[in-house]
Image (tube, rainbow, N blue to C red):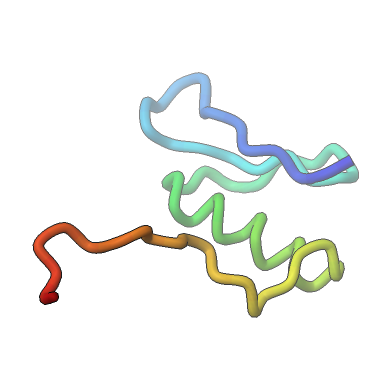
Amino acid sequence: MYPELVEDPVYPDMYRVRWEDGKISDMVNKTRAKDAIRVFLERKGKIDRRMPRNRPEKAVGAFK
């Protein structure tokens, strides 16, 4: 079971992380929650931290 991003039922645009053991994190914004999950998975060895997170194809308006 992996950590899960969960929307806060009371506050819009706020999230919590449901960890593997069922515990729920404090309320944070989406960026912080996703980063916490990423760091957790890196430390568990489930993802490689050297892999780029985003792979832009080609920047629009880039120099030729």
